[in-house]
Image 1 (cartoon, chains in turn cyan, yellow):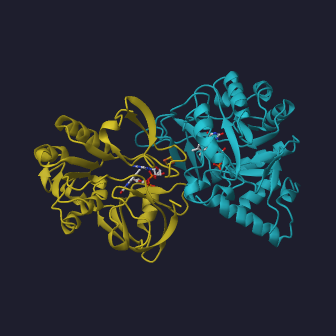
Image 2 (tube, protein in one colour):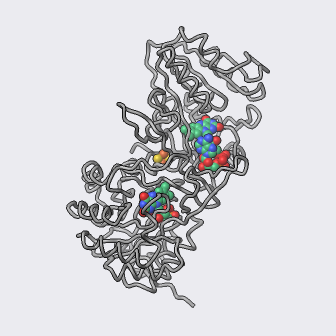
Image 3 (tube, chains in turn orange, purple):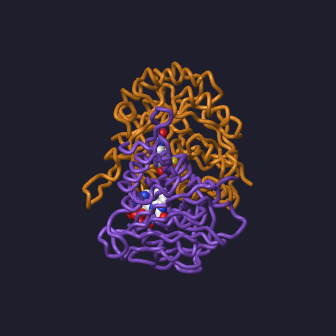
Length: 303
Length: 252
Ligand SMILES: Cc1cc2nc3c(=O)[nH]c(=O)nc-3n(C[C@H](O)[C@H](O)[C@H](O)COP(=O)(O)OP(=O)(O)OC[C@H]3O[C@@H](n4cnc5c(N)ncnc54)[C@H](O)[C@@H]3O)c2cc1C
Ligand SMILES: Cc1cc2nc3c(=O)[nH]c(=O)nc-3n(C[C@H](O)[C@H](O)[C@H](O)COP(=O)(O)O)c2cc1C
Ligand code: FES
């Protein structure tokens, strides 16, 4: 049994497999499949200052080796999360990451302030949601806006701060550097790639929001490339995600430069995927006489 | 643990009408009991999303799914052969609430008819009304008879049974029943809901929405409902698929 534990910004994870924000709710449903302590951590559904109902359905479409979603940040609001969900989550024996999103910089700051008073383990700042009309992705697409929001939220956030990056940009490495320079403790990437699917008979987009965010195996090579580029550009740790489906994918993402991993879309076909992936990684380490999973991080040998 | 993914042995998978298949899976006796109106989330090899299919029947240790081939997922399902093992997450959702001492009208439209079979088996002397577009699409009539309910039949074009919609038959029989359960296309459900309101009869409807997780975590299968005068989002997979008709915001 190799050592699967990892550290991200001073927080210890029993293994590197974290449920990806938005695919796992606040954990209650999947706790009816297996104890959540089998996961390294949970990144909660994105929360906003006030309750949001999200977009009208359909909110999902299937595409080759992937899916498009446009949930539109449906959530009960930060106060309800702290009151109704966080106490339960904290009893599950896994790291709890609060994922926050807002319409304005001030909203992010107020949420960071409120969550700093709680016992969440980390905050993940989503500046990359493609499915809401204002806010979301607009904060994540230029170095100036990323620097501005990271600096502002950093001043209010007394927990480790993870900045979640959008892949819908031209130069992700410089965006990552802007977040690092303003005090991000870690980065998570990638959020979904904006996409579209049209029904050729009705000529209507399948998703009511017209466009949605692409995730799943289809985006995996893009995610690996981006994690690799960013890991070469920053010193802070990276939580890698985007299409991880098998334990081989997990190893690949670690080699590209990730310290921990988030697992999303694959849960929809196999709810047990994070556990199977963690077991597969463990086997790989044992078979190759690698003592600790941390030895894989960034160990790719580029030409 | 409330949820479990199981590999179920495929007993048979026959085409029972044009493009409509009847899949029987060995479910066993000691598994989680299935409530009528619940659904199964079926894994399709090579697909990112499972396919939600209502439980048509769950008696005698056999899980029966009757489905229409629509796109690639259901086409792949239709090619599965006896002896294969099918990866199924079931039973999911909240089904029809059936109380004893009440007479139910069970209304199925098209591919909404299958879940009414297991529901009929759970009711005392139900009134079953089935509607189809055309004679070639009529299914499960003998199965209802074997379950002890003589189904009334109508088709849009009158090619078999009475010509017209299920709502016409329901209106005629409304005085004979206490409560209505319905599954079928949205316009049909909306019309039934209006009819029930007119007659002051409670009505439960089974809704469809595109799904991912099937258990209430990903929030993609949203439906707008009203409760205590307030509108809110619920989810077909977890709060439904069966809803009280008067709670559904039909143009939401
Ligand atoms: C609770 C519930 C119960 C259902 N019960 C039955 C049943 O008993 N028999 C039956 O024939 N069909 C039933 N359906 C509809 C069935 O799920 C779809 O016809 C099927 O998913 C289509 O898959 P496909 O790959 O063939 O089509 P595609 O169009 O290729 O599917 C693409 C994606 O859209 C989704 N999708 C397409 N149409 C629907 C739909 N109408 N509802 C939900 N998702 C859809 C698919 O699941 C898939 O994710 C039910 C749906 C729900 C939500
Ligand atoms: C249905 C769905 C909802 C999501 N909601 C959020 C969210 O609220 N906040 C967020 O930061 N990311 C959200 N994401 C993005 C995922 O966290 C993840 O970045 C992305 O899906 C890539 O990983 P995957 O391919 O393993 O799913 C969502 C993804 C999906 C599929
Ligand atoms: S399918 Fe995930 S919440 Fe209904």
